[in-house]
Length: 160
Image 1 (cartoon, rainbow, N blue to C red):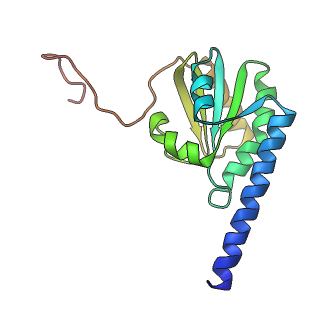
Image 2 (image 1 turned 30 degrees about the horizontal axis):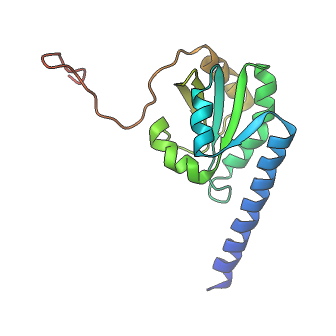
């Protein structure tokens, strides 16, 4: 193994460890939950407004770190209206199709068991403020996941 590859692997491991420490600190110091697959399902089905940070490995997607750091400020911005959670990169990759995620990191908004919307990537604070306010006012809808549209026999297709 070359020195460059070995250094990269060590650096990635250090970043992952530091990121995990950040997540633990967020959990300990705020109302942000760290969820596994069962916890994610329960979180989505729970009532009221919720926001889930879909993370990616911080050495591959440094914006993940940035978005995680501002989550406590997002919660302050919305008062007690939002429940917040973070899922691991592994779980995020497994669930990305379900929520139509195309870019990391992503904040997914849910309400009463349904999908509300998503904010993909890092934004400046003014954009977050505006987009989060829109999410809180937006009705529950269908996630833009991969799917096959179903129509009744004899009903006109929405594709044409």
